[in-house]
Image (cartoon, rainbow, N blue to C red; front, side):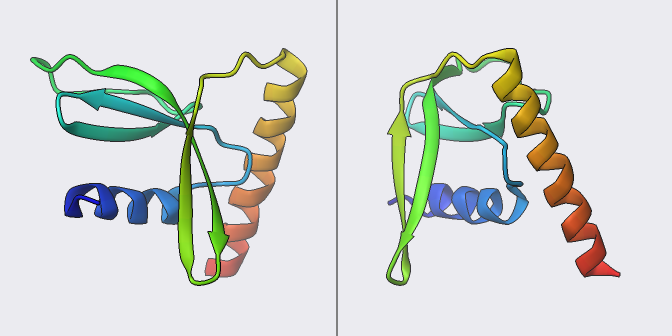
Length: 97
């Protein structure tokens, strides 16, 4: 795996909150990762295309990443995810105190 992608995934894992959907973007040989509930801003001059959603799990001492197709979600499911994200953010804030 490219070093720049490994670093992006490392940052992603540390920023990810439960309930957030991770979108995978591609432009040429470059990849970018964003959360579905945060605004996306890419530098102009590049043609970024969303190629799917990223899911991962831990097997042994490694992360295993899978690129999944984009999913249609109901309003109810998005609300449930937003609530899980809110609870996870609050949990992390308590950890910092």
